[in-house]
Length: 405
Image 1 (tube, one colour):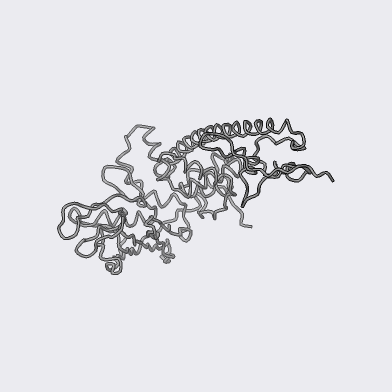
Image 2: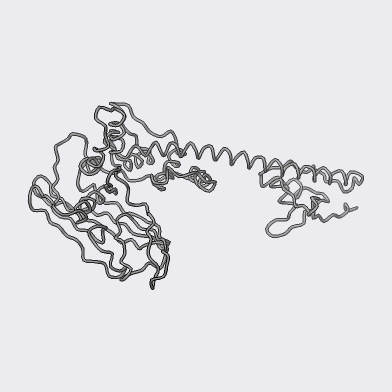
């Protein structure tokens, strides 16, 4: 078994933190103080949020989401492999980017066609310092974004915080043959806008086929295994990303964000404002999204309470209908002792064996069987009973007199 050393909180990214907590691995808070989730249900709930992604943590909670969360909580939590990182302050490791290769990346490429992508963009860095100069729109920021996205999954945006690139936005494409109007299609932030003279999307989304691969060298000049992030779509048009395997770089997860996302946050920090600095640090590590997660979890909790209240009220109404039908039926049989069942009809219950005392004991009450279960059997097990349009209970029973033998 591989020995695990809890990672310090400030060295975690959002993904590495969620991975460790879901897998029942503790996080070092301060010194020897460790934090871990209390039980499997909490871990399963966090796994549901982890698989949905931070972009969905700000959404409203629907009834379907609440039911999905309840189902996830009842399942066993998985054990996810830890995101490997070097221990803090073990050395001053410095990596040098030596090669960038990008495939169909917005700002560096035209879209082409789904079957004929443009030639890959390749840049090899040979000098200790590289400066890029060019007109506005020439691709300088896109080149930086290709590097940032490959490492973090985020891209820089002017006048606002860096954003994740796995969330579609709507683009509008003019109708064919010069007809008036436009059609909306989902487009990834890292996918080039298609030229309609070459390719016109025929579905509600623009195909996604983007990857960026980075190659680094260590302090000794040794070339490290390349890291690659891939973005594509499922058959239903849903964006999915395959993150890079950063373990080969042997750096802390937070290290890939310090020189990439931090420059995009610096202009938003008000000098001397402690709260703004703290917010920037939280944004840097990605942990600020946990506030959204906590808010969504609270809304989900309230939604589940509402759901339980409504279902409880519905079941109570069904139980009242059943009891009324049962009592009426019992009253009808009372003048005929020979027809009275030897055991009283049970109270409404979710217990599947509730009807066994009636069906297995000697008696004259035989529920009419159907496949898979008769209405009367359902009424005994679930506390419900079918009604006529006028509200009268329907009981389908086969009655026979006691044998005289």
